[in-house]
Length: 370
Image (cartoon, helix red, strand yellow):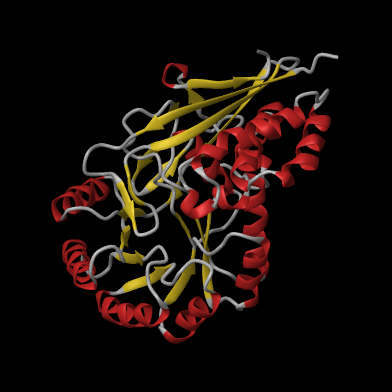
């Protein structure tokens, strides 16, 4: 029997303007975002669910860039003979645990979009929340020249951002102090500043560097110690006197449980790419709510479609902050519908995630109907 479903996987390489490129201690300088897209077409209902993930983020997912699309295609082949929405969901649930979380995220995100459209509700409502006109979020100043830092900060201020996170741990601590001092002087005493070391420091260095940086009034430090070194992270959370947030180190169910067991001493940065999908990240957020863990709803730097599903997940939760700037400034984004204004990100109030794709930018990798 012919399945009513058709799957198509695409890719595109997205870029920011010169001077706005990503550069962190974990990723290095990133020239382009390697995005993988999925369209799940339900031919019987004349509906299509869309998903997007970024492939070149092995530094946070552990899955090599070259494996992301083939893994997603492998998962989709396990679902190819589904005969109904219930059957499609069951086949995904049965097969998904055998594939990397980043591949599961691509498929789950498209399924959420498809099922929300089927029910005629926003993805936020489908995930158990409510659509809102905007989600307040911060903005990030990546590593780069001082001139680029100043130009980017002025852009963010013009768009109404009042919470800024500075990437640190790439150059010297003196570089970090100089940059943070300039931002504090430009923005004023009441402006919320944070820093993100992306796992660059050993535990003693982290404690010493935080002591030097805290004079600039930072509200939290993200991933100050090496990914996976739980004793180091817990020591910094105990001894630094500042809010410590985990990001790269939050990978597994065991990591989630350990954050919960820390009794709120460690905050968390939620990302769909790490969780394995929009529904999965919402489930983690609700577990944190039950254990008194503060968290940010974040994302990778990625296109509008991936950004939109993260925004909807944020609407289904109560994060302390949204870190949802990932699509801002991309010059060749095939996704449309995500806007930034007054320090907030917005998506349309319509069924699904509210983002459409321009096919002319996409390169087809696989078509289940071929």
